Length: 463
Image 1: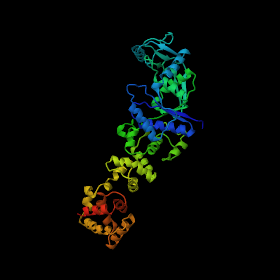
Image 2: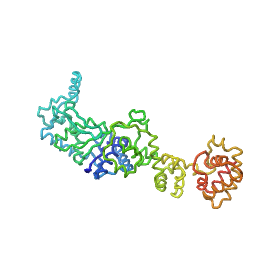
Image 3: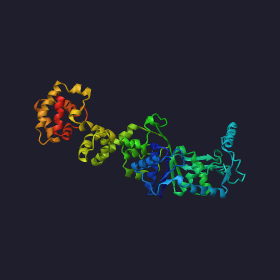
Image 4: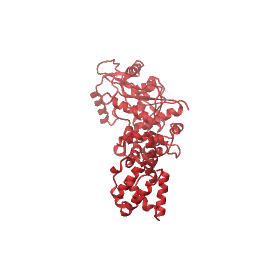
């Protein structure tokens, strides 16, 4: 495959959300698949809404997702002179002209067209006036008067737009600033972009940008427009559906590889495979099999995907990633040696790092502070249950060494010697140790707690 050069160009007017993240992932994968380059450009020309804190957040989210970029980070506000050089070229070659029409005059032209049942547009009255620069004057592209703009969209297939649907667009505003479409064309050409993948809300911009490319005599990149992500109800994705910023998913304990995997599958497929390693995604993603239909966001499936990666990752890595969430939950700063057995016991029961850390809580408080779930205590800490706990205090006190193996053997012997069934003993023991009917294997829980703490919990529950 020929080397592909792609880019992601967010505006720093907010945090990076999942729709933008998915686009960035598609662009990154396509470039990496071909051994090409991936550029990151900050489109910060909206001076009122652009903030450095959002730029910092976007960059942090990109790094967290593993989306490294090539070359220097580009900022549009630092490239105004370059844009104006290209605007001047268009003026010189006759493909652009100065326009003195005021915004009110242009709106009147559009309203007149509406009244006649025509598409509202600028009527080109300054096109032949041969005006020069002047206060309040903008520069417009001299669009063709007939024909079609045709391009083969990587996602949607062939798209044709009649030039009569377009007007002579402004490419430099009266304040001297280039417009979005002009700046994007110059940037993409200057960066050598070969493929532009973006949301389908940009489809209407593509014919306009192609006209600018052609007027400048520049090669036109391939375009691909991916559909928006919908909510489970097939409506526009919103916060009530789980549409949040990438940084929020990070704070909630999702793994970056899980979020990347899930977002890629929202709009792309490789057979029936659901889960991919990062290496597989790079190998398989070649820009084909992008679905033109909008995909629905499913928070439960994202959690399922995350749980898979939590179970599959090395225990030491999982423990290290969980450590900050343990501290954030107010459970102290634990060593790797303490965290690893906790992760081993509970990772099958948690869907994210935050929930995993919280599941440790019953084992990290003292016996005196352990609280019982009212329903479980009423059901299992009965007189009969307490009698078993009192007897087990002596049984476990004799365990030396106090290991998972010796604890299991002692418990099994107690059950057998007293002609009991395990289900008669396990519920009160679990409630005494955890405070509720949850957790891992009883012998693992006790081995982690240690003899002194385990016996203290049994004595407390036995009353």
